[in-house]
Length: 283
Image (tube, rainbow, N blue to C red; front, side, top):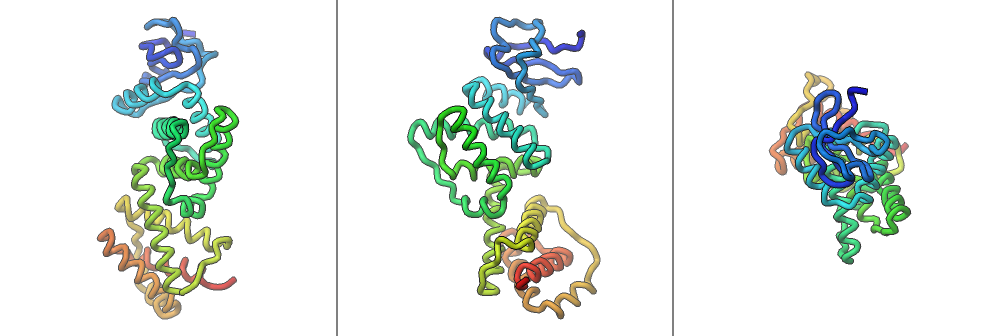
């Protein structure tokens, strides 16, 4: 087998730097994989647990630095959590999640050992807006407890969920932006609740669709992409037919304009009006 990977640099007993068949730089991880190895040696494929492909030299050196200082057990549990998350969500996650989530989980375990508790101010919102990711976060806590005997608080399931949300959006943003987007979704929901002076039925399918729409809507605003068609006539019909819903949409428009300087397109106004109509009409 002439295409087997070779050791280029031993980072520690469990981690070596190499190149794959496509000549991309990779980090190869496995228990004891780098032990007593030197540059030019073939990598024992039976020991490989994970191959990290870095997109650029900077993220490769960040990853190598992080993986070299994090306990092997923390790296292994994070890889298993990400594998589980990919299967449960049924979608690809950005490679960068291996860096961000390994760092987060290892730090969370260290904090726990020192008795430092970090509260998640957005836990309520994460449970509601990102429930699949939150459920994976809870499963991750169970995996950490069963494997490492460390019992992290529910707040951590929320933090893990945010990392997964961020990774499924292709890492076009940092975790800070994902957090900010979550707050904006909450504010828009509050505008709707106050406008109608009522709570929304969070168990309805329309609520779920509305939240999904808001997630994409806010993501578009933050990334500067817009929905834009030529639906002036349709908007005029909606203004007449759904006067109250349209007034509520205008409040959201004013908020987005004031807070982010973002002008809603006519298509955005139409979609919001229709979703608000659905979510506020008793079934």
